[in-house]
Length: 179
Image (cartoon, rainbow, N blue to C red):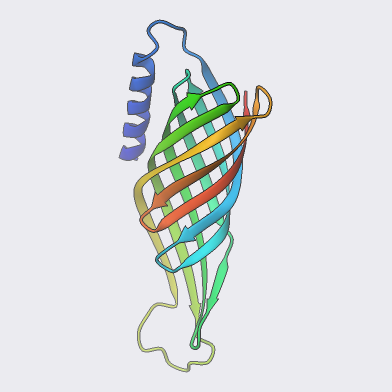
């Protein structure tokens, strides 16, 4: 929670301090994204989907919240079957630059992520060590970059890369509607 307050405070302070000569233009938006989510610690890539809600402040800054999940993947070896699924919540500040139809942006903030692993050993009678079900939660620094293309004034499509937490990265195609 402290990270969220600091991120929002810093973004607002920067945004309000740079708009002395012009009126503040605040545009809320919602979006959805789909893509690939990689967990390098378990060497898996998952299909992911996410929802985004945010606000663009002036021409240079923005704030965004997003929640996403991955589909469950299964890894089978000689002894066991492991099912893995992840979910995450991110709070991000956005630095933006624009041309006529393109917007380039960088994202920085934090993510609370959870990875669930369910391990089954159908051919083993006794397992000496280990935990059959693992759930790990991590709160971490996040950063990424992307580009949006404006289809119309309020509609845009884009692609981005995000480093969510220690071993989690995402490549996403996004669709955004601005109010």
